[in-house]
Length: 503
Image (cartoon, helix red, strand yellow):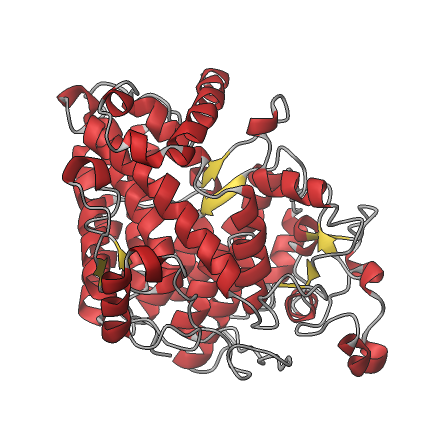
């Protein structure tokens, strides 16, 4: 079944070239929109959720560097220096709206045309919320209600919805998607995530609602509580195997892990371009975290925890000498594990059950959901360690899991705030390789506590960036709407906080 889907994925990747490069023709010729089945469009949007350039530049080179999971001495990676962030932000914005959101909108319209596609439509609504959350979390106010409606409603300059309305809309979208899903309805085609398994899609939708709800904890706690409670009542991810991931293989170039392929093409391991941050490495080592063997290795693949080392953030090849003996040479600092994360068939991870359990531990700590926060914390840690086997083939021995839990990191935290800090630190570790989510949760919670870098030419005057700037193209082709968004939200700067960012 999966190989059949992957064959259709290759066809859609070629079709996508037409969708991306011939925008005006597609928006004037209805024959181009009605000839593609919704299952094929579902495959396309799943495969193209992030392209190689944005995987490298935004996820690794921006988000993961901002939260000090990764580091570099290169000047073309802006994240840990808060430097020249506009170019990467521009490509993320343009690529997402001109390709991914446009094709997603086609998927929703076509799946709405016939009751036999209700399961596909349900999945599409849920996945759309995932896509829009990523964009609004990065930029703040963004096109949402009018996005992708160029062909159907001749809206070529979509308005920017304010983030509060976007969040309320996304929550409703997921709820509507869940209502549409049913085991008794015709099966969906083209699903790369769960091969049409409705029960798994319902769990994914529930876990996405938990993520959406908890993002609002500091700004609309009543809506946050209501959303999380609804999710728990309807079902969420509970086991490592529930994870939402895109499985890759090496049979065709189009099926390879897009980030690993980009790493290989750009020679990043050979050139010591991106390293594990010293901040992240120090935390893993201070807690004797066995996930270090899954995440990190030296260039030659040596994953012995004793030899792993991190690179300090915020330096270039000249200024790194300022750290003195703390710098051991970038060639001696750890990479992503070349035998796990950087394999060409390593999966792309979108949402993990360990994330859900950590968020539910926080919800329980706040008194929003029943249960024991300490037990949920332990379940989350166990789940995260078991996820390493499913994702990367790394089986962490039970004795090492038990030793890690024996530290009682959560129980020993003396106050509610201290417990929230432990949860934030664990979320930072569990969401490694999903920099979008690590960055968003850090802004929401303030944890882990990070020391800003101070690089000459920083766009933030030594503050950790809170958002990405809008696409420069929008100021030409959608000027009135982007300027209205800026008036409502605040200056189009990396230091402007988006609506839910209050910590």
